[in-house]
Length: 241
Ligand code: DX5
Ligand code: ZN
Image (cartoon, rainbow, N blue to C red):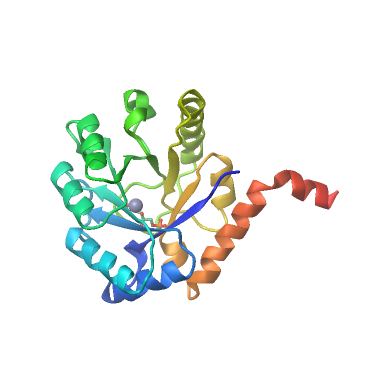
C-alpha cells in the first residue's frame, strides 16, 4: 500500500518565527519540511539559502525532531548551491532541468554529497526529460502551479501529467525493483488531495493549506483523512452498500 507523505512548505510560514513554525509543523505530524529556494533570477521571487537551512536543521536537532528537509531549488545555476545545501543538512534536493546545463551531472553531484536527488517539472516542462535519467532519480517533483509563489490555484492539467509520470515510474519499478517518489507541489489542499493521489502522487507539498490555518495538526489530519478515503474506495463502497 502506498505510503503517503505530507511535506509542509515553509514558504507560507511566518518567517519572523521560522524555527518555531518548523518545530510546530513537525510536531503537528508533517512528514517532511519543504524548503523553497528562490533566487529572483530563475523565478521572480527571493527567499532563503543554506545558512537558514543549517540553522533550522540545528534547531530541529536541539528540539529532538528528526524530520527530513526537502529542498526545492528554484535557482540558476544549480550545482554549487546544491552542494551548500547538502552540507547544510538537506536530505532531498530537487532542481529544475531548465536551470542546469548538465542534468545528469547535477543529479550525480547531489547523490555524491549524500542526498536524494529530485527533478522538478514546471507545468509546461515535458516529461521526456526523464528518458535517460531514471536511474539517477529518487524523486520527481511535479509542479501544479508555476513556481515562485505560494497560495496559487492548482492547475488541473497537472493531473494528466501525474498519471503519465506514475506510469513511467511504475514501469521503471517493475523493471528494476527500485522506487521513485512522485511529489506534487502547488495548490494542494484537503479538497483536492484525494484526486491528486488517485492520479498517482505519493508525496504532497502543502504551504498555505497548512500555515494559513489556525490549527496545523487539524489541517494535516484533514489531508490524511482525505488520503485514507482515496486509498480505500473499495471498502467505502462496500460499507455503503
Ligand atoms: C511554489 C513553491 C511551493 C509553494 C506551495 O513555487 O514551490 O512549494 O510553497 O505553496 P501552496 O501550497 O500555498 O500552493
Ligand atoms: Zn516548492
